[in-house]
Image (cartoon, rainbow, N blue to C red):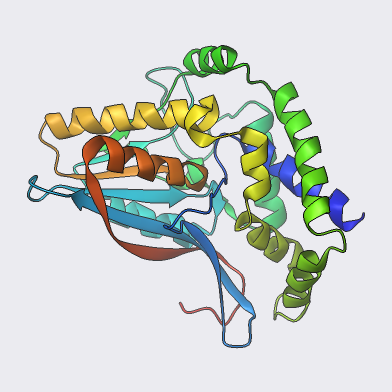
Length: 291
């Protein structure tokens, strides 16, 4: 498989995860990264918890964006479950009918997306988010579209998997034009091969997840898309309702794909300001990563 056929495969794999994986713009705030040691060997794929507060007034109000990846280390999800207890409300994503109950491990899951996630979970020796996160917690609040609402939103915007396929095709051509010799891929491959791990595929996926310009070309501008923009606005509307109801410490727990646009919405619509970032290891890529 050539380097660019490999890139097409990786992006196609991410599309199978849509609407729950990665789309990161060149925004000032970083939401996903691969952390390396002093010899440039990859240690971990990390996801951000970014914190915000009102610019003026609203004493005590804090809103955290907790970036998610839907297959990860079991310890990653354990840390998130522990953190979720500090919030008045945790607003979570799930395109599902109203009153859907996520009952944890063993739940029957249908559809190409769930099956693909489970397949990748097994290949990468990771855990599945829906099996690990305690969605039955009393402070969890659904903050997403239903399948019918998402379908209607896509129809209104002229979006479909067919459209995404052709965007993928043209995006792959654009990527080749930017780097016809594949030098960037060779640099990534060099780092992977020099690392102390036998899971090169997992490392390559981790690096691809931090380079998401191609996915922006596929899904279009975040604010205008159904997959990102419409769902994010629903989450922000639920956030407003929770604040109006008296909640002061709120988390939005959404796929990292959503976070650049989500950040812009909460800043613009609620006049919040960024405070700082905490990083959490989602995939350990080296036995030398800090415990």
